[in-house]
Every structure is written in structure tokens, then in C-alpha cells.
Length: 343
Image (tube, rainbow, N blue to C red):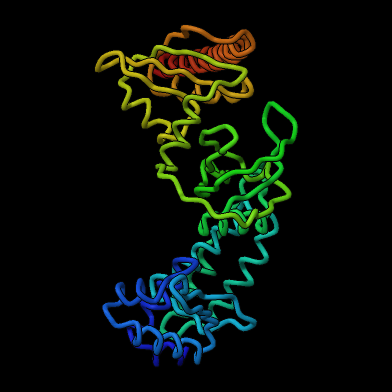
């Protein structure tokens, strides 16, 4: 970490800029740093002397790029960044990425070795006190494929891959990757598909044979998180149920924290309608049960399998809790009789 102490603030800002984008021109870097291009060239040479593999080309189309080296350069993290990385490694060990538990803990140990002494107690506390519990049933994602997709998103490179769709077999797709998102413990790639002239979201655990095409594209503008949540809400699956709920739309929406395969629409200040759609009736049952815990509702429509399951489970719950209620009432009557006898 001694190299960090020798690096002035401008040099750290230059390094941060080089890490944030694939390539910068000398003019752009000079403008961002508020210095001359000659100063940029000198600072680049200083980075190279510290083992940072900064490559450069001359001419009007020339620029600077931070390449990959054979040795890990001095780690450049401030205090908050170091703790954020540590927490991220703990979270990565908990699920979603295949084989990441051991790798994450190994990386956490290496991070502790290169941090300054003042941060090691905090990192040790994070490592010993924090642990992510793996979530059963979460599809595992290949971290290598995820890394390639992330690089293509950052560099605006077209990527091709095989995709195992929900309703169809595997197809070969060629898309403009926009963003990687996590939702409900699953990884999704949001991309623009030129062949379909539309945006598409792909579950990364269903992606294989990822191949960068090495062809750049001009990125399009899209609010990725909002698009993904809305696409789930509007999707039509094999099974569905429509409800009228005697509660406000805000109350019902808050029950699902905005992440649900359904659409909530207000009727008035105290009533709303909800439409759910899912692959199986069991998934719809959990969502309907969550609504039942909030407010009374009426089932306006349900696919036959869904209606049958909801009705069957409702009868079972009524019988079970009804029997329990009768037993409790009998017990209370017996206690009252005993108290009367003692009196």
C-alpha cells in the first residue's frame, strides 16, 4: 500500500477515470482533470512506473487504455470502498453464483492482507460477523458467463449466446447488452434485440455459450430496473387470477415491496383490482395468500387449476382452524365449570 501514499490526488483521479471506461483520448482526460495533455502524458508515465499497464496510441484517433497485467497493481480503495467490497464478497457467497462461496472467502482473506492496518479490524469484523445464507432453489449462474456479459455491457459490444426459453427450446440470440440486474435472487440481462427490434430480458442461468461478437454499437437509453419490474407485471403466463381487494392500491403494493408478477390498479381510495399471472397455480396461491393477510377480496376470475387449488386450500385451512377453535372453546367451558365447582 506504500504506492498509494506516493500517488497525489490527481493521479488517483486519472486512475479512476481509466478504470471507468474502455478508452479515453488525451484531450478528454486533460479536460476532466483540468490540466494540459502534456501533464496527462507525464501522469500516465507515472502510473506505468507503478506497474499499471496503461497503453496508448498516437494520432487523431489515439487514446489511453488501462489494460490487464500479469501482476496485480497496488490496490486503490478508500475506506468506504474497501468495506463495500468486503460486504459484496460476503453476499456473493450466499447464492446465485455457482461455486462462489469458497472463492469469495478466499478473496476476502486476500483483501485483508493488502489493506492498511487501520482497516483490518473492520474487515475482520465483517468477515467473522456477517454471513449470507444460501437461498434454496435459486438457479445458479456461471460467474464466467456473467463476467463476459458485464464486460460487453460496459464496452458496448454485441454478444451472442444460446438461450433456453421458458416456452421454447434453445435459440441462438445476438443482442446489444445494456445492463445486468438482480431481481428476486435471480440475475437478468437486459438487452436490445435487433432481430426483433425490441428490448428483451434474459435469465442469465438460462444463457450458455456466450461469445462476444467484437462489434461495437451505440448504446440506447432505457431505465433498466423500471423496465424489468414492469415487464414482470405485464407478462402473461399459463395461469392467472384477478381479484377485487377492499384496500387501497398503495397498501396492496406495499405488501409485495414492488416486486411481484401482477398489476395493481386503484378503483377508489379504499378499493383496488389485482391481476396475477404465473407458471404454476402454487405460485399464484402464495400471492393470493399474501393479499388475504391484508384485506378481504373477491375472486373475479381464475384459471380452472388455480381456482381449484385456492378453493381446496381454503377448505383445508377452514377445517383445520375450525377444529382448533372448537377444541379451544371446549377447553374454556371445562375450565369455567371447574372454577364454578370450586366456588
